[in-house]
Amino acid sequence: MTQKGYLKKVLQKLNINGDTKSVSTSLTPHFKLKIIMSPTSVEERENMTQVPYAKALGSLMYAMLCTKFDLSQVVSMVSRYMHDPSRSHWEVVKWILWYIKGTIDVSLIFKKNFISKQECIRYVNSEYVGDLDKYWSTTGYVFILFQVPVS
Image (cartoon, rainbow, N blue to C red; front, top):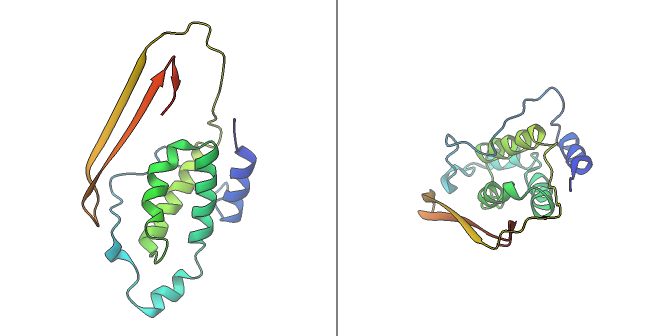
């Protein structure tokens, strides 16, 4: 399963074309998002009304729900600031778009499993105090049953 055509249109509409760079990770540690980064002046807020922040996030959410599950964490992070985004928040969204540009050919492949192992495998990862506004930790997990992710 792929959304290559859709993602190409999204990148084109958001002016991420062949000349812009692409990256191999959806987010890097140098991005530290906080609510205090939101615009403080009327002029800054006016400038941000020209930025397609909500449009980009809506497109990212659609892609995330259909085929780009690897975007769920970063889209969740940037969507927290949708009510009052700043240039710093927009830079992170552009980074995610550059990531999509670099991974546009990556797709989901479903195939029949002829050798089914009857085992349940779990993978867990956590990040302590990943949310710099509320100081919450983030945990992610995957449960695999018969070599198929189920949760």
